[in-house]
Image 1 (cartoon, rainbow, N blue to C red):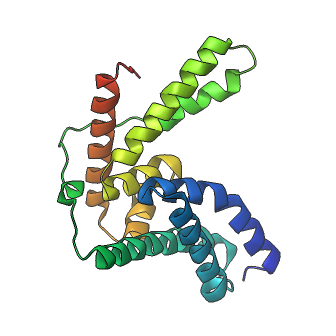
Image 2: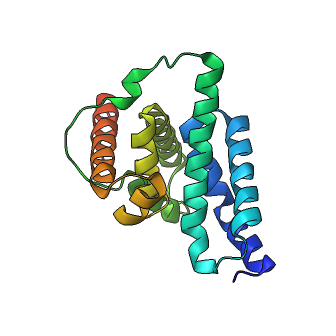
Length: 188
């Protein structure tokens, strides 16, 4: 059973990543903050007595469900789902860790020039922009696999879909990101 301290430490450790991931999903900072806070409250309220090892998967599932609830409420408010193209994508295959490629550059910041640092920051902004443009399920799968470093089974459990669907979503996300970044002249 998780103690209050363990639960608090866990929530602090996932707060920033959960917020960033949710901003990518909903594209609104205020809504993302509400979703993350709501997810944290639900975890503490309903699952705070679970063992600490179970908290990460429970939190990911709650966060995914709260994000889906946000979209359902938004759909109801708008009374129209206008962007069906969110569920379509190219079907090229490919697998690489886009974020890891550029996160390793942080370790060499002490010796890089201002020009290199600026260029790297611009590329990271372009990558973030392209991630935000991905369809919702692809973005969710991509962020869980490569941002949260979850394996296929954990991602499938958190998303409530099959492992094959996770692989398909990730593959399509990587292909779309690769194509979009290549079109902007960014070679990885």
